[in-house]
Image (cartoon, rainbow, N blue to C red; front, side, top):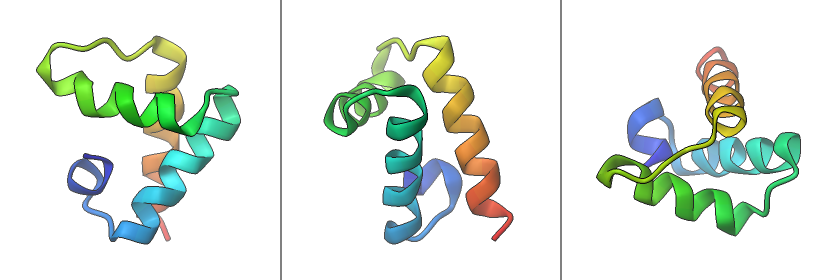
Length: 62
C-alpha cells in the first residue's frame, strides 16, 4: 500500500513503515495492519497519518 501510494520501491516502502513506527512509538506490525485496512474504511489516527505524510515526502525527495 505504501509503495503504491508513494510510488516507491519496496525497500523505500519498508523504510517509510519503519520510520513511522519509530517516530510514533507504534509497533511496525500494528501500523502495517492499519495501513492495509485504511482504504476499506479503517481509521488511521491523526498522529500516524501526519507521520506517514512526512515520511513519504522525505522518501520521495531522495
